[in-house]
Image (cartoon, rainbow, N blue to C red; front, side, top):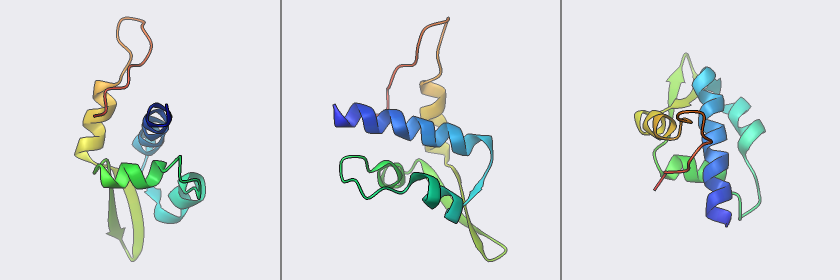
Length: 87
């Protein structure tokens, strides 16, 4: 059950980041957790779904190519709800 919840939250993170690049600080404020059962940020990083890059001395976070593929694979189709196909 926890994997389904984490996968759903990772999709939320990716959708949030897909709107625009975010500063590392903004991402940490919104998505870091100390709950070991909800490692959303950590899992997204380990799966290579986000990229962190330097922009004029600041760290910026964006969706990686792998993250975009996950988003594309989980878009609702034909009026149906989302399906989690992350692994």
